[in-house]
Length: 197
Ligand code: GAR
Image 1: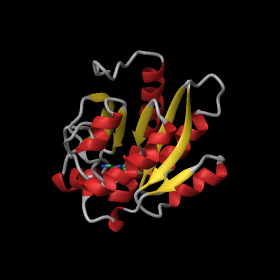
Image 2: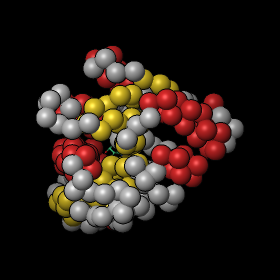
Image 3: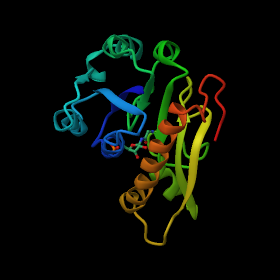
Image 4: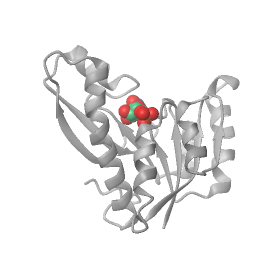
């Protein structure tokens, strides 16, 4: 059974999908703690699913490294098998990636390496592409630059706004995230050798 710590910044809708998947006794992963860099709406899921939560507010620290050290302190006692960034809108400092890597994965609402960063959906729309996508990657020190574990194309439709497009991307992200965690648990993805899907 893979024990997961999940980090979020927002509503946690992808986390909710993962939590629903873990209700199945045959799904080989459980969320042991939920963390956030701010007072994120998705922290409420902790109460709903009886999972402990922690918040390490990014803005309370002078540097990213100090924030990362405080975050690592909160994660460490859970000894996670896998750290999942599910809408965490902060770059993890290298020391945190080094401590928990290579077992750190991230979901992204674009077909990486296209449109990395905090505005993957907005940037795809602005570029006028007809297709974007969803990706799950292993986390390295760069911005969404780690090895791609799973990804899928999603069309951009005429009249799409950032919100309608993101709403169509998210269900795909959820499916890819749930499948990737399963693949890691059953050894189909080996993060140590990082064998892409
Ligand atoms: C998701 O689409 C996730 O991929 C994205 O934030 C959203 C979180 O939604 N993350 C990034 O853009 C990271 N660069 P949620 O809080 O409803 O799960």
